[in-house]
Length: 336
Image 1 (tube, one colour):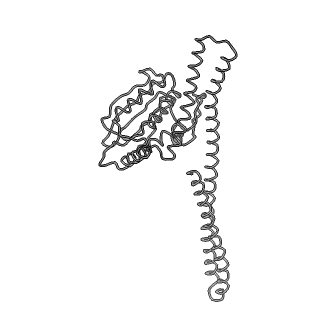
Image 2: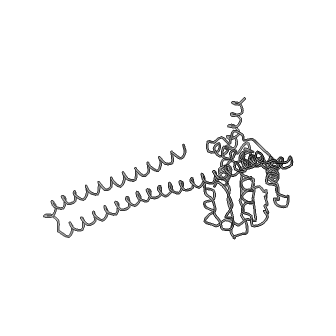
Image 3: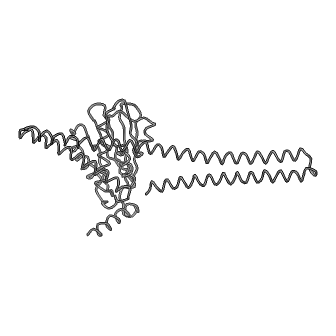
């Protein structure tokens, strides 16, 4: 729905621009012939030099206005077309990536089942195959769950599960869960600092944001991952900083990484798979919670920092967070 509105908006602007410069063209043509007739009537009254100068001025001004109008119209056309082609290309890449992500675990499960059907496999090997198939099934489930979550995000449904949490306990709990999920040793993902405030979040959505940041840190790490999550706070915000020892992100790509379907292709990590949605989800989730996220990466192979700010919950001062809680409460009442 949002995409169709955007397309209609650009079409409307394009049509408006065309009407504007066509109107100016018509006005210029009208003034051109009007001045010719006027100059013919005045040629016996005014000196020839004055008539010539006035005529040239009208042509110059009219031509400049027409040129500017045409330039604006054409720039809008090219801007829309380039954006449309770019989005189509990103969407094609996304389809290819998501297809690969779905096919890989399915192919693995099929291979294990065919092996168990064709060959005689001992009980120990069967258990091993089953464990591997369960991992592939979990991978599929997580991917589908993530796609459904982003669909809910784009339809403004995250607030259905928002609640008030102690920031310190919640964040550290999510990081510990991620450490176990990604099978990381304690020295590979370290939590520093604390935050003695409350925040209003959808816990499952925030987990997706954190998991995506940690997953990226692992995939793009130079050697073994070394991830540090630092907690801090100001008078208004909870600050969560994710630092890693990865390959870094160029200044140019830092402006693009939060766009939907955008992926970084690096010679340092050519085999990294993904959908181009991870960091887009992260930004949208943080934004929906009334927060913001920034990226800092200055030197190649010296890692990246993602700094998240979430608003502290204060009943008397935070209207937006109260609004999220009201929606969540209303939704729970409707379900009951």
